[in-house]
Amino acid sequence: MIVLGIETSCDETAAAVVRNGKEILSSVISSQVELHKPYGGVVPELASREHLKKIEPIVQEAIDRAKINLEEIDAIAVTQGPGLIGSLVVGICFAKGLAFSLNKPFIGVNHIEGHIFSVVFDNPPIEYPALALVVSGGHTNLFFVPEPGKYKIVARTRDDAAGEAFDKVAKMLGLGYPGGPIIEKIALEGDPQKAKFTIPKISDGKPDFSFSGLKTAVARYIKEKGINPVTHGQEIPQEVKDLCAGFQLTAIRSLVEPMQRLALELKPKTLIVAGGVACNMLLRKESAKVAERIGVPIYFPSRHLSTDNAAMIAAAGTFHLERGERADFSITANPMMKLQNYEVEDETLRRNVRYRL
Ligand code: KG4
Ligand code: ZN
Image (cartoon, rainbow, N blue to C red; front, side, top):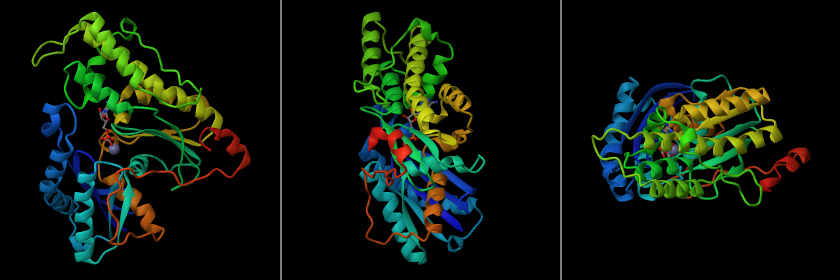
């Protein structure tokens, strides 16, 4: 089955052609980073206008690079949510129009499920149950996945997403956008022991995530030390390098600790870490230690499939299409789309997954 994937949920216009849910024939991503850079974050109105300009040429490029004709695709998979409504609408309308004109089936895909499917390309088949951490600019959730297509959130962020914290800290320090890769690079030359932060404690003891306290602690640190934002072309001061290292270490530990706690309790057969923040090498290293401790494999997407792309949407779409699922022309963008469709039935598991029942 050849599926055309379309992704426009945030600031990447992406299209990909994937065969049988596993083989990427093409994956084209047009990033809007330069457009949003001056604002230090994504401006929704600008994002949708840019998607509108790019969607047609990007889909055409994906078809051309896959060396197929449009008629050769079997179906279309498009991100339905969550995301920015104006951005999602562009992808959905385009997908609907194409599906109608080609008379091909199409399906709406949950963006978060797409991130989880991003590991299918470069890893052995997933053994279930799996535990999947999805960390991006908009989401930080840990899913228990008893079988493909079933999801139960077992830990979530109480406030900000992890990627958002990286972006905000970079903005405070005048380092540019998106913050994650910049902070990771600068942190390499810093000493985390020189700028120590504590891992947030969740008041009710649940293994959830939280990043707003850390963000505030960094803001306070910047003020107390009198650190000025780095200006263009200026050499990065050592204290900023240390701060980046200290922040990164605490942010990554805040992700890995709840993951370890739940991995020990739920005993999954596979760990998955996906989403933009999965590019971070410290996160990869620390979460690999968790996998080693419980003796299971851990799968990451390759770096270019960690951030938003359409290949992962095509892969998740293929899974649903192969099960006979289809969308009709009434589907609309769902900016708050949830990924949770499983209630734990097994008694032992029910006790273990008690946090979210
Ligand atoms: O998955 P993604 O492309 O978009 C969303 O769905 O949000 O994730 C983008 C996020 C941004 O917040 C970015 O700063 C973060 O992923 N990110 C990283 C790294 N690379 C990207 N965070 C930490 N370390 C990185 N190397
Ligand atoms: Zn994403």
